[in-house]
Image (cartoon, rainbow, N blue to C red):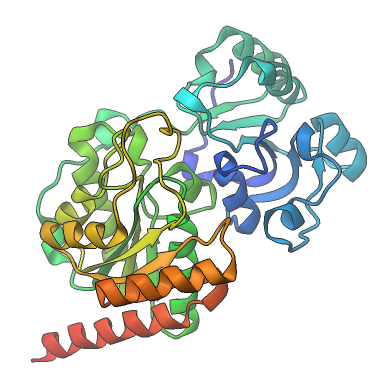
Length: 369
């Protein structure tokens, strides 16, 4: 297989997204993020036999984006007259393994000279079948979840103490609750309100969308996660000097398959947290048979406080909820937690911007004193 000297950060161009029949599920959240926004790739189509014949944007949130969903890559090329430069695997699978049913589709892309961007845990560049297809088609395979080389990793050093701006974590009570989406929407809303804001990505989708600062947490050896987080925040501060740095959370504090969040609060010295929650989800994602339920969101707020950060607002993912349920949950959490509860998709981001601006004003007043 040919080697490409282009760095991962330089990748970009036209792309299609492979979702393997999962586009209409939460398992395709990478695809959903790319359809909403990508500064790295221009998305020209989605390959998903189950949802073929529809517009990807309309399927996602009712907003047509002129991104066709087709059954095969050849169908996309024929219908658009354009061959994408990249094919992005845009769904998550159990165990992070590419289903064998998708082998022919991936092989087809490589044989046609379409570079493959693989966000699964399984390194496809190491599979002989795909190596041969890539060689024949003169294509490249980018496994973006491969760990960095040792020389490129960072240990935590304490330089986070040199970052004076407001640092906010957008954490959640489970995987796939919309943490990244809320963080990106808030980042955009803060910028539009005249508050200089930057976002630290911590997952593959953030990188695929073109994020400049961050790292892929689940491709990072555990000992280096605090240091990589610190390095991303510190580098962002040194280069951009923002008023606010938003940190995208991963999984949740008590998800048994990947407990995460304590290092964000402690190693990243977060000033505050926005907590994303899905009220009607009782079991952790992909752990429905495991004897554990998602903890009460107010209890999670208390745990976050004990780890060293206040929760400034609860944001709700309202999927599969009607308007009456939404209002009932909002009122309950507000009353029991004495905390603002906001539904970003229904309420907009004005309430969160106001909260952040109030906290920012407090920080600036403290510095001036």
